[in-house]
Image (tube, rainbow over all chains, first blue to last red):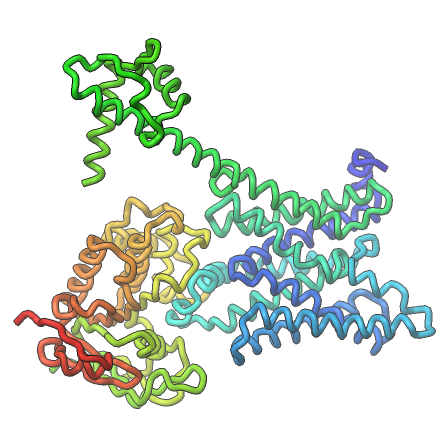
Length: 375
Length: 244
């Protein structure tokens, strides 16, 4: 199947439609919530939560013997929440910094999870196969009820976001100030964090414990590059996330042996890379271009100003002078001279230069401006 | 003497084992422009944060016009240290100033025309109206400080707490800010400022509190701003010349 075939099938084929819808919704909700995680500088929190969810899945399986995703995800949700609030506890109650607390809980829970997984796999009953899909995710196992659940959670999340938009923004920007205004910051904080945990748990089946945090961070990091408005950022992140989901699913479905989760994450990664380079205001490319242009302009002005100082001492402003007397200290290079000639500010004759009438006037204005700004 | 705007009794605050503030009793009369001075680690910011309920004190009580702070929030505005927030946050100057209205709006309700108008007026007052749509990371340090001040002005309070509003601003901005503070005092407001530059205390303020974990002294600048109290607070022989 190639990409074209995929897109013609996506509306008619039940499985493809389910998976595509699922990854799109997942990408959107993760992008939205990821924006908050990124702006709170809690990027690693997503990683810790997803790893912390693993033992919950294993324990839920051991207790119930069921393999329905809903049952296992409730286990994941509980252990994810325990991990999250444990992290918060460590940060507020000890001297440890947040990165230490995150790393600690992440590896501790993941270790326990792996231990339980291997224990389960050694058991004689055949039911255990397939639990390891939660490690790297397997989008192909999504069924319609999973997608409904995702859509339901996303809907609630959207309503909460719209209701408490003002409070979320305030807390993200200035938590202390929020407290003095009388808002219960703990409540807002727990609300945001709980939804982040929920979104991560929903994504485990599709993307897996290991890569889940990328779903949260990549769309948000990409979106931040394009806008200076929180609202636009959240919308863009949702769009990038959804698009990564759809495109990742399409690519993985049209090639053999490409698992969906990693491809989605890679597509999101391409978004990030592209945004980092090509965003007009914050991107590396345009920033470098602006920097170079600025520098060249200044070099030009500096050379012209120096020429003006010399020309000023002569009665005839267009009296020719040797190129030799110009030097790099004054911003002079071959190319600046050429450019000045091209702009008709300077004329060249052999080894001599002279200011044109136009050049003298431009330079005198420039010079006045400079000295005025210096004062 | 005027009414007491802020009354602090037996306030003790500790972060870990060591107390940061020890048994502070403080009465701030209405209508003063007061500086809190003291060395680094003296607990100046902590005092403000404890009064505002950002920190939980170990002991002590705080009264704003005779009632607990939680009942009097509308009367109080706060300017945090400029460095306490991330100025790369995706928002505009106008938006930050509008945040000053969120307290009176309460939960869920969004700012409307009236709130926006108040924010624009505050921006005008601090001379930042031309920058209203500017992304906040593209403002200079002094401009960011003015935005914070405008946000507090929008709160339209009776008591203003400011944590080092002169930090990292140039002389022009400093004068602009102090003029606004003096205007607030003239309007009968109480303004409490954590301040570092001892030289400007007599010129800017009429009331001063010396703090170094314990309260050293509090009162009118002309009575208590002297070498004796400075030495007690800073622990070295301090000499400032005070213009008579």
